Every structure is written in C-alpha cells, then in structure tokens.
Length: 220
Ligand SMILES: Nc1ncnc2c1ncn2[C@@H]1O[C@H](COP(=O)(O)OP(=O)(O)OP(=O)(O)O)[C@@H](O)[C@H]1O
Ligand SMILES: O=P(O)(O)OC[C@H]1O[C@H](OP(=O)(O)OP(=O)(O)O)[C@H](O)[C@@H]1O
Image (cartoon, rainbow, N blue to C red; front, side, top):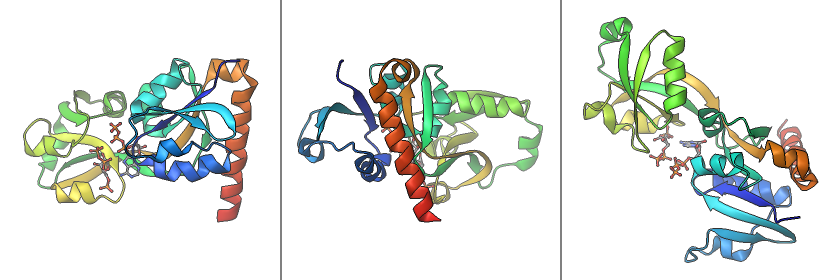
C-alpha cells in the first residue's frame, strides 16, 4: 500500500490541531517544528504516514483530488469549495469563528435596503454569491486573498464578507458586522474514494472521532 498523506494548514489552526492530532496518534517528527527547515513534507512518529503543510485552501484541494487522503481545515474552506469527493466526518471543535458581512460604520442604510446589485470583496466568492442570492441580490465579488477590511475604505467594494472572531479587525478598520452567514470550526476531512478503498483512512477517522467524543465528554 502507498504511504498515506495527511495535509495540515500552515496558519492559525495548526497550533490548536497538533495536540488533537497527537491524541489521535498522529505526531510529526522533530523537523516539523524546526523553523529553519524549508521541508514541506514530514515523517510521522511510529507510523509510515507523511504529513504535508500547505495553505488552508490547498488542504481541501489536495484531499479532494486524492493527492492527500486526510486533512484538517476550517468548515469555511469545505463549504466554499463544496468538492463532491471531499467528506468532513469529524468536527474538531477548534478554530471557531464566523463568516460575516460587514460594511463601513457610516454606510447609508437606506441605500443598502434598496440595492439590487452590489460589489463585495471576499476570499469566499461562492459563499458570498450564495448568501446574497438567497436575499435576491446579485453580488459582484471582488476576490481578495487577505486584508479584505481595506476594500470599503479604498472604494474597491461597498461591503466585505470575511471571517470574524473577536471583531477587533472590523472595529479597528471602521467596519461593522451586519449579517452572520455561518458559524465555522475546523474539520477532519478525507477523500471519499480513499475512505472506501483504504482501511487505514477509516482507522484514522475512528481515532479522531473517539478523540473528539472524549474531549466533548471531558468538557461537559
Ligand atoms: N480570526 C480567526 N479566529 C479563529 N479562526 C480563524 C480566524 N481566522 C481564520 N480562522 C480559521 O483558520 C483558518 C485558516 O486561517 P488563517 O488566517 O490561518 O489562514 P490564511 O492566512 O487565510 O491562510 P493562507 O495564508 O493560506 O491564505 C480559516 O480557514 C478559518 O477556518
Ligand atoms: O475578529 P478578529 O478576531 O479580529 O479576527 C478576524 C481576522 O482574522 C482573520 O485574518 P488573519 O488574522 O488570519 O489574517 P489574514 O487572513 O488577513 O491573513 C480574518 O480574515 C480577519 O481579518
């Protein structure tokens, strides 16, 4: 059997995910923690699994295409892509935030209510379009990869759709949250075909399921 590949995101979920992974038996080798290392692929202790560290959106792409069989990623990314080949069986209860619409504090509420078309800056074009479609509004999405909060001030878009946790970033950039589109947390994801054909994938899912259930019991 070829080596299993587990994809993790480089960003902020990783610190919270590593202790959960360890409880499920997935422990990267020492090189993973070496800040000077330029390696992107790492061995795991006590197993022949390989860990790859990639950008959050790319975790879903690697897993959906079967290049990695397992991964960890925010449900924002899972829902934005909606890949048919990707299955998200375990809520890891970390990386909590929400996807929201925001606009300048001093925005004209009357103009907003009558708008049938608007321009929105977001890293999530599909979720953004879908949200406004449900309200009968055709949204033109300007795709940005970060610092969405700058778009209204600079006239790039009237509103933004972005992740919010404490709300500090919105506040410090003169924006106010107007709608919550969805609550988000990190998920274990697997490639559906790999889950069907490779028993090792199911074993990893069960280990994470048991770990998540034990964590939930401990929290109650
Ligand atoms: N403020 C936040 N609070 C909690 N979780 C967050 C927050 N921002 C993002 N997340 C979660 O963490 C995931 C990764 O976010 P992060 O900001 O680390 O990546 P990124 O900088 O957008 O990624 P990349 O650099 O690959 O584009 C998001 O997809 C989301 O699920
Ligand atoms: O509500 P808050 O607690 O302020 O968090 C929200 C911020 O966190 C995320 O950005 P991040 O810090 O990951 O930077 P980036 O996405 O712009 O790289 C998100 O895109 C917001 O900008």
